[in-house]
Each structure stands twice: as C-alpha cells, then as structure tokens.
Image (cartoon, rainbow, N blue to C red; front, side, top):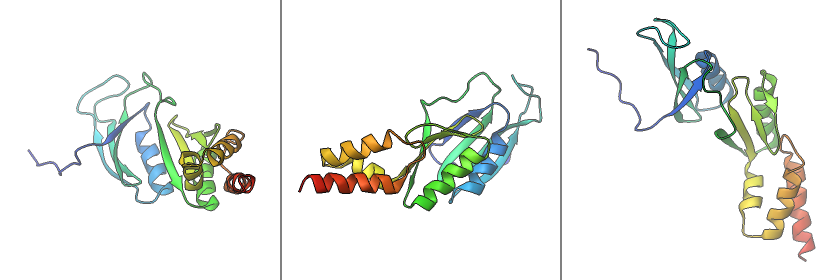
Length: 170
C-alpha cells in the first residue's frame, strides 16, 4: 500500500451533486491561495455514481483544506453554511461577487450570494464588520441599517453611514 500524504487535522467537506471538481476548479481560479489537489475515483458503485467516477476532490480555498464529495442530489446546500470572504476594497468585493454571480450564481441580501452549485457566500468588506461589530452602537446601527438595503455591499455607503454617525455624535 502506498503511504498517503500527511493531511491537515481538519478539512471542510462540501457535498455536491456531481460537480465537485468543476466547483473546485472555479474556486481555485477565483480566489488567492486556492488550488485543486487530488481527484479520487470511487472504488465501487455508490448512490449517484459508478465505480471509477470522481468521488472526492481535495482542494484548498483561501488556504483552507476542503474536500468536495460527489454524493448525488440527496443533501443540497443551504444558508446554514456559508463561506465568509473578508475584502479590503470595493474592487475586491466586486471581483468576488461578480465571479460568483456571473458564473451561474444568484444574488441575495446583505452581501450574501449563492454559487451555481448552491454553496452560499458572504462577500464582506472589513469596514462593514468593523462598523457593525465595533464598540460604538450608533455606528453599528447606521452601518447595519444601510447594509440591510443592499445585495452586494457598497463600501462607499457603509463609509458614509460611519461618517454620519460620527457627525451626529459631535
């Protein structure tokens, strides 16, 4: 038996219908510090597939070890799990959002979107997190209220809400 490479102590396993390799390749092409590793064939027939079909795909997404499992349509993704990607600029926010939505995905609210495989994403500028999770309740409320009106986050509107809160406080 060939020794297996050392694995990280934990990885995320994402269940796909049958397109785990396609999804992993998209993620690797879209996000930095991402790559596709080994594709493992099924050693026998399984629900939703046959012996020799791609069963699992090892990939790294933004430095996080993941496994894509082609398990069939039994367990679809839901909003109960999402990847939250922190961004520093509007350009970065737009690039990730547009890549996901423009590749067959769907927009949602408050920085959330869904890729074409049903995986949920939060494309979240750090300024939004800093404002809503900070110590100033007025800044948090104003930033939160503005965020609630958005699909993709508009950093200029969040920055304006933060400024308005500071101006209102004197």
